Length: 165
Length: 281
Image 1 (cartoon, one colour):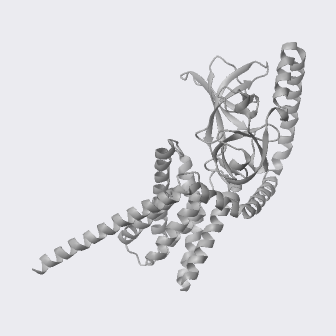
Image 2 (tube, one colour; image 1 turned 90 degrees about the horizontal axis):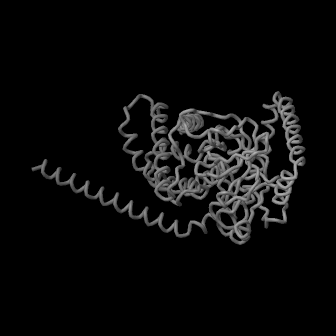
Image 3 (cartoon, chains in turn brown, purple; image 1 turned 90 degrees about the vertical axis):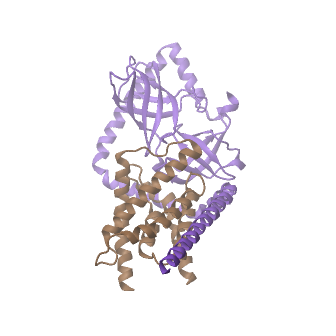
């Protein structure tokens, strides 16, 4: 039982490290895919029943992103926690389909969560440092699309794992 | 009666739900507050702990990126080489012009004097982290090494990278000049060696643009931009970039231009922090 918590922590740790030192060399327009966020959203989507595990996931994913960010410490933890709270209700209200985990639901949920996270961090950054971290531009759309591309890969990996179960 | 009991029950559940949410929020706020009290220590400890792994990742990233880069840019290498040769010749002719007049020779002396390493107290630092989205880098020197906020960070070739934005015990965060909140005064050296002043603003994503250049000033693609020291943070004559394309709009009171920055994170491993410029001032 506790093994999955340790594995998850190590996984988030490696992803956060790679995100801060390896992946920036492969940026497109300065954009690096947020793999920690992708994993977090995938877990929210696929493991929605396990509440304790998801609370732990929000805190640990947020913590690692906070350590490597230049924002107010805790911004990611709060943002991920809010996403977790609303994810349950949001995913419940989606139209039921024959498929157990439809991709369209995942994509819609991912885009909404990403946009919320971005907006939330921009507000926190502005309130705490009076600095603009982002301005509305087409680059944000590229950023979402770029992240969604990797999230799609993650989605099918998770789906395969779920089908095996 | 049943309905009444149900509504009473649902009201109770709602109350419990509300209490749970409020308790959750309070716990979260307290948790984040405590984390923030120790944020500098947590970050510093974490960076120290992960430094060896980060170095491995950084080297791997840099090597892989340059390997991919050389494969994809093979066709452009010849063109780039030609451009460099042309630029070199242009710089040589500018240098010859500088040596010609006594007044200009004095300027050369000033530049040379400024670029002498003994003029500034420099602290050598390694890059240990890189945030290309927010335009920040992390270096392995901090408070213990005499680093403090707003110190200029340059490369061995006197190329300006940015300034120290946050200092931890043994690490510091550098805000690159391409960060959206970065503004610095620059001098534009055109072909006639008459300086024009402007402002360099970060655009994010490791890009810059030139702003606030008077419309009556003639600027051209290829003009070199150096620091002017007007803002008091960066010493003068540090290399910033060169003008890529100017954008003149008659409706605007100033000219702007896109700028090709001289700093290149992908090929840089070591940087210098100028620790005593403010004392000189």
